[in-house]
Figure 1 (cartoon, rainbow, N blue to C red):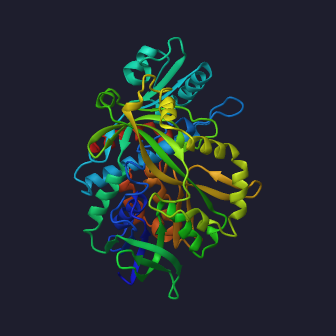
Figure 2 (cartoon, one colour):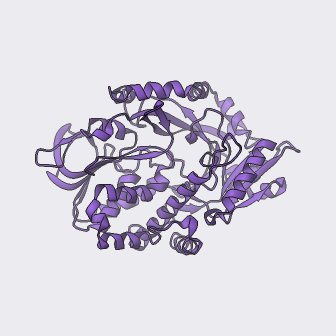
Figure 3 (cartoon, helix red, strand yellow):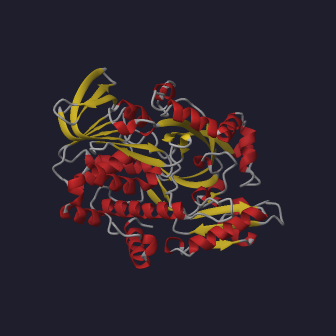
Length: 491
């Protein structure tokens, strides 16, 4: 292990991969040490089977466009996420152009995104949502229909044997994508490992980070193969270890860590094993979440491309484990509870009784129950055509709140030390899909002087040509960037 480095990245997932590329492109001489507890990159939250893989662009996810008590619909989050996903596509196009991967076909595919609802009240909601979104350039290509025959041409599985006379509606974005973030992550790291100044340490678990007497941070790492503990001094540390990030953040001696807690939620898929059904469906069809369900549990009939093979999933169904990682420890939740976050965690728990009730109900589900839930979307679904498969482990953020004591946050949040020497990423969806925007967003907080330099500004615009622009308000720039990324990414 190198005793000193400019940057230490904890976790070899999509976030660390993205930040490593950005920093190496901005500063070719920078030295980076990456520590991963598993024996391969991108195998936890970034892995295809553990990640929703939608390429979250807010085209179809109804939880990003909530209906308020007065009947109005808030589309601000959808606009923000869609702009962030455009940044990701621009960045990936740059990586392809720079040879980080030979082509984009291994990690991104064109799969239409649909929203589908039934019942008069839900149809009214979807129509209002469509009218609001389609007025914005980001969603200008969205189609809407209440015609069952039209919807059947888009997604035949969801209309076959459906009760006639039932009000239905759907929206469709043809330009939707499916993303294999595990393959993207591993492609990036394969390139990075060949670059001078970058070293990837597998089977290396970060135990602690402490202030170093010479400045910066002492990263304490244990090699899991021979149980040897080593130290590395880093000027900047990024904690991008998925669910393990929270416990590492609690160990870092920065004021900003206080008050944060986490609530683990695991997921389960119904995976189709009938090739005929898999071949009939070619879209991501999202519905409305059940009352009390977390956003990550929004049901969807999901066409996926995983390792070059077309798959069909439904879910996710929620599970519960006290682990913060799929390969973590059952003591993760207990170890995360500290004096500074116990009040926010209790308060958030008391305020989220419907979520607790929902999780208990989900844990009681049998295979028959899950297939019955699937039949709301695929009415003729048979038990023997679907099998249960584990999805990933997520840790939802709990944070201190002045009035409420503590709140449960559904999303991602970057926690950065006042001096910018430590940054940590907490939370889940839309996470991976917006990795590039998140990492570009922390640069001015962690590399303040460099980010303001003309050299870095120019390079960032090279990596992301729309850098600094609001694509939701600049139709011409949006058209240009979408044409370029579609061409480069083979979409």
